[in-house]
Image (cartoon, rainbow, N blue to C red; front, side, top):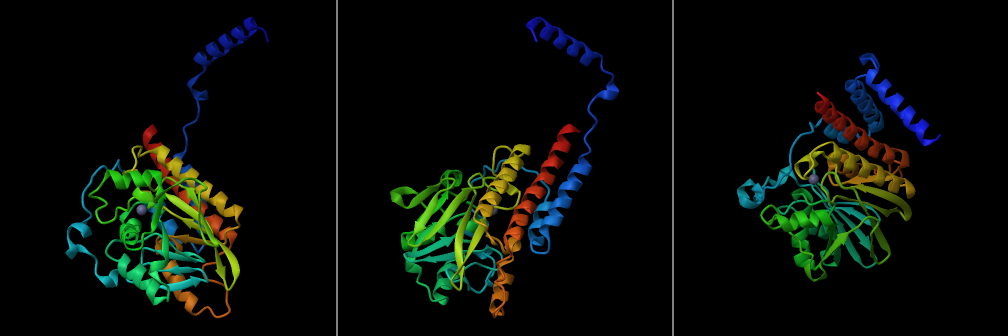
Length: 349
Ligand SMILES: [Zn+2]
């Protein structure tokens, strides 16, 4: 096509476009149908295993703004506001040959044992990490002095709460995403008693695909921003009576990120959706057949721990299979898509 003809046809298109009758304009999007479709996919993906995650994130309204407050958490400001022990205590449990549960009834902490010491994954609250993590390790016959690394999935008080204490007591290196280190450093009151340092080689800033290796064991870290800007998820291998079981660990779930990042809108949901795709791909790449989280609400950890006790020769209660692990991340993606569509709908109205 020569330039003249190109210009002519462009002009024709332009005129035709101007003269197009209103009826041929794009039909209005049916947001209700799109939201319904996303919810249907999420519900199907949830099956019976992931109903906790489904009900939490498919029903939560999506709204908020950036949280720039730097207030002391209630339970740090006033000890009388620390929840009573019966609200959070849970028994520690040996889950795999090399993985132990040392969390509470709602929030989880895990100890991965290696040939060179212990890696702690998430640290619950400042008020219960001493009893549940240190006390739990001792109860399980492990030595807290062996803690070398503490990996924090994201910098919220229910997961970073014990990091400073473990770092100070055991000289443990704390690993966290760059953006969440920045949160900790920017808000000294919000993180009072729970601000590990990355000075003096005691802190490690994670990057996508980073491997934390201790002795014979490696945890691979994956950037999954969304819940917080620095949220990490992981893949690693656990052993069930010597048999390897690959684990995918989901580091951030609820949509409260709208309160923690500058863009409380559609873009944040897209970041979250892309992150779930990313960790789902990494889980598939290692054929992960167990899914762990940092809340029992999402992975059913406390119930599964009870099932372990009565397992006998039966299947491992955490080993749901690769297809179920993938469905977990589908629930997260589709619930986020439904929430994103609700925002899009508001914008066009
Ligand atoms: Zn959180």
